[in-house]
Image (cartoon, rainbow over all chains, first blue to last red; front, side, top):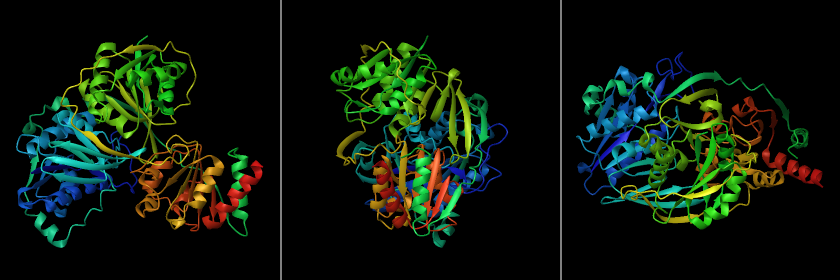
Length: 267
Length: 317
């Protein structure tokens, strides 16, 4: 079985994230890391491999699209235990919207799988920067396969996949057949930390770097200038003005709370 | 004037409130046409409500052959409707399902996609809240038919009588779209409280509850609020994941958000920072949540909340 995991290198959410003058996300001036939500996808891929009857027949390849530093996200996946890595890097890709990114990523997934569609394409539930959560569906559309998303539990048997999804109104079990695109949530199970052995082993694992030419994707299909939606402006939200802080002493907290709610007409 | 397609979000024939918000926003872009995927009977039952909020047409796509399958058939049906009607835009709810339908639709129709809009102005200029609510972004689709998903509470539904002409639409659904299927479903117990993302008031509990959610629920019920939680409370198994507010849970933007026993990590703030009024109760006076509040109470939620709840009942008589 061939599993391809899509990972994204994102600006650290706890850092001061901001935009460039062309309204793209600053990906250079801010510390980056493997999106924590993608770690869950790597983890589930590794667990599927470990649970397989013959784990050596399962390959897990981590794929990313992004500038030079984005290779760090793939490296982390290799340290966790993925078998191989693919990094698509090309200046023309900068500023691509989700639509163009999905085009490049779909081509990269095929390349990583030796030209065809792998049995499983795994993703996190969303990135922690753009947070659109649409990439799995876009990839599935481009690869011509179903997507089964937001799994909190994943089971496979042969080419059958069963997932559990905690929806708003119901907990559902969803069934589908490979090949498919699968996204997992942060409820699917804590991601492992790379061991020292894993870190050392990762250095010897194959890591391919491709440009758009290698993927047969034309540079005029991607990038900021051909994006199908444009950002017209960004504005930092004004910081909230410091509110009133009261210390609860002998019930004064409850009184302050009740009076505040009444004054604001919430009662 | 061009049509604007609005995908109706409904459960068993009951239309959810965000659909009326979409119809209201759609009027800024053209003539709203509701797209109802369900049975003809259910469509008949909801068409008057859709018309009351401005739907000039109600396209009904019979779901007999696609019920229980995930989003792919819906995207196919919508793509065919887009081809037929050449709408000014397609609006969908920013639920996981709405976003996935939108994603597939955008690629099928070679159109730009904007997700999680909190407002749409004339000309299709959208407003989004990004980076944990620290920035607002205005954007616009420049290619194809704009596909836009809109967050709940983005607009106040306004009544505006539309003709509500029902038109059946026979979509051709491919076999390939009917592959991922719901094989079992366990409905969640109904709490009787408002839906978390739609509620005007949300009361949330975190690690500081120590697993004791009764004071949170009692205050929520006194205020007619929804109950939310931080990830710490969900991971501890105290409440279901559907309660979670934050990056990997729901994003809420209510009139009032009450955070009790929640420290206010960036992941939680991402889900509630755009709330109009924020109140926090926390024992730790250095909790980062206090940076956001209009009112902060440094104290034990287990004494403050019950006393406040009682006072609220007393005021209400």
